Length: 230
Image (spheres, rainbow, N blue to C red):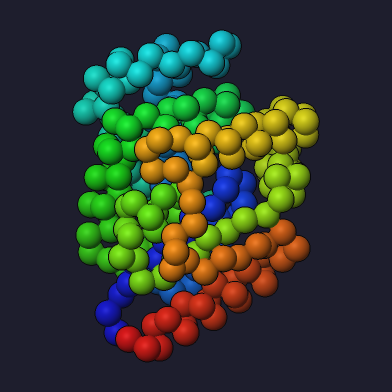
């Protein structure tokens, strides 16, 4: 059976990365976390004083000029996939609230989206991938054979994100996390370049009341139904 491309899009902290990663493992596909790529660029911008967490400013011209020097890749680790920024493992650092506070404005820049879209398309050139993000099924791989759009309430997503940060001992209040989620939703859905939206042929999943095991079963059933006709 020919391998397919699977696009999983949705709002921040909707659980789409967990779903995509676990599906890829179950079916033997490569998992690509496109959100981690935007977070890595954001971390680079913060480190180089191109983006300021303190006042929210971003020097888009400097970041665009730096893009050719930014290389992002993934590598296996003992506890899952690791994100590499110019060869450095930054998996933990890109999940911080500091990066979360700046990733949406960075990701809204057309130059950043164009550069990472090309990276993502190269990664998927051999097919057999599961990629999650905001615009995978609409912009990066509009011809993907399987598209899923994931959603849950902002409060549910903020609670998940808060617990995730607490488990990693990263300080944050629930109120701050909720405000960040709502703010990111606004930026993601209203940006001019590749806004977050449901692809017309995507299957919608509201996973607000689902367990991880129920999500796994739902995703695998959809995959089996799609590939059974190929």
